Length: 110
Length: 298
Image: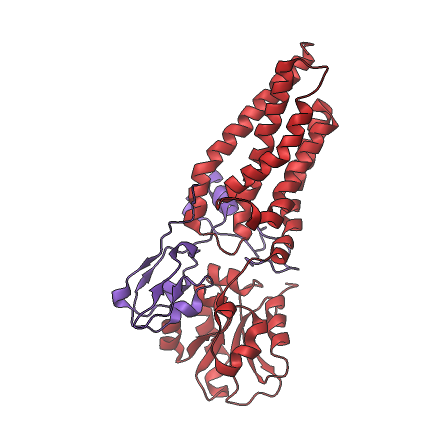
């Protein structure tokens, strides 16, 4: 069965890692786990490309093209003739939202 | 402005110069959740200006970010208020924060706390988070709370489609339109982990086929219509309903806590043409039926 989520833009260069463990602290899906000498890439397919690990890696051992996985925002951008990768999820914004115009509730993505 | 807290430094209880500092967004619910979780603990809350948006969304947009954190540390004079140089930032703020950059520019070390504010008291005992504290889940309640908003987004097109179908094809066709939207916006989020396959579009197509089946049987067994017309009626339901539900399912990706942009993009290129083809064929077949009725063929 086709799974569109197996591949992503996450790249890990373990030879640069000096085991500061920040990646294991910031990842919300346990993509990295602590190893003896360096972080281990445990669940690469679970990466949602939030970019937290790469931004917080002081050794530049992690690269990822961060972005929001929101079809509504990407299709809207494409329909407006814009690049899908330039789309920005409008959740929580004043201009309408893909996950709630009101903020009475705090949905998971928000 | 109704959901915004004034950015700045807030005292929590009776803080001393060595009390911990917690960063938060200026979204009322984020701020209140933090205050409630820290009841009985003395400290400071540094509220960043995230334009009234919660931590995770604001981090994705960069408003809960390095720039704002450093600016707020400096504008509040935090370095003169506390004697330590550590600030506890919610883990979901990390997509906007670069701790080495914050350290370089403000001399404050960022410590990433747990995902949920309610875990903070436990976290503060050791300053170590368990795997559970670090993981984001997407449980039933979190999914179901999104369904009213999802439904409202699709409600207007649904009512228009239902009204048109009522006049053109009768109440059963209108009910099919309402059922498709309800299934796509309410049933799909509720059943998300239980529907087979990983892709949202294929999950939507599967749910759509299940929802469409009774309508197809009902439309396709009309004794007063010829066999070919019954066949077209059933095919219309089997093409249109799954296409609508799959599209609504695909749009739910933005509400989840785990879909990657790469994956969603792949889904769009793989399945939106299929959905468009199914919807187009369904509409053509529906028009064939309508014209056949109009010209008295059936």
